[in-house]
Image 1: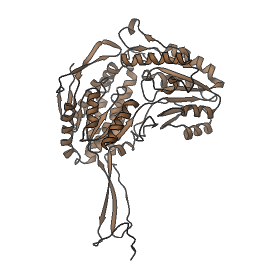
Image 2: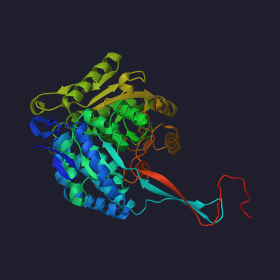
Image 3: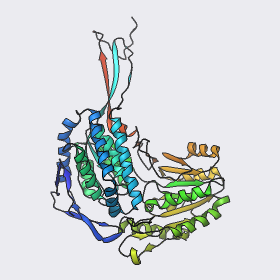
Image 4: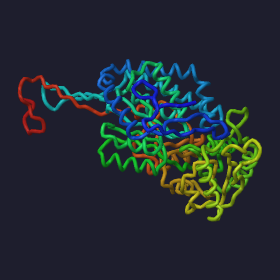
Length: 495
């Protein structure tokens, strides 16, 4: 298959006539397709199309824009299984997870569509007589969307659907590791009736991404990816005075207290740490155990990890899929070596799987380190793989302190039956999300999603808060007094 860019309603190759290959990470003999390695010229063409389309799209009534996004949701429902299978083949996670990824986009489409009738502004009494104060949400303009590969339909939908409902036009640069899913989503939006130029897809690497961020007609960048790249984007956007929304890394802690429902906690740790092969910003990467239950819990956890089935996500019963590519697999291997050198004790895993069904893919055994201290790199740095670091503590207070000893602050979790402990954790954990008796992953379409510290820059995707990203406020004053009234002037307004 030869994938193309989608610009101004047409499928076309890159002007550079350069290409990159995308292969199945579970079996690299399986070539998914070639995709354009686009240049700044391709970005400029897409931005020009988006800028031209904005003149019309912003005037389409918001409920009508929402109706088109709802139609996209209907098409996602119809093509859910097709999309899920394409996703698993392209980026590796088990089919049951890919179906959930598509369902999240469906939920987001329907929620965002309904907000087309609820883009509420505010009105308030004026300080002057015979005067009305109003405020309205206005579209930003041309928005650049840059996303990661691990949730190739869900995460883009968090940005794309609300942005369209708000009246913006878009240029999307998806990850090179999930280009096919991006084109499938573009097909759906085109079939739903999104006009040419309103939504554009340009494939490529960092060259295309940087061109998109720097383009003077792009008014906003919405990014999901690594903290290092996000910081660079923020720096450029700051220099150019454009809006910027960042969703970046995580190093998420899960606390288990002695009174916790341990069977439930065990299931939560397995899913949180090894679901999506640990390749998600919300993965449970730090387990903080109270000493009273640490030994028995770790024994049960290791026994269960040994039973996890690793393999091709399209096969029935597979629970842990491949690593996305060779570069990331080598990164995980290097962190395992760092953990050993720093003195952490390896309990399970720690090696690449290469025999038999694993011979042509990027597979890594689910891995657990214990005796991990807060000074170790495997405690502090995002690994983005199936590696869990375990730290033992003696109290709730110590657990929260250890959890907060991180540059990141996305998701957090505590397992306990003690309501007082739960509410103390809710209050004191430094994170944008806290779960009680559930792992650190998962998001609901109608709730804010995002983090603090090195995880983000204060914005929240999902729910009603995402519309603050993709709109600007316009304040309107209507004076029907028939005379000059000067606000902020010390006058007797009653007379």
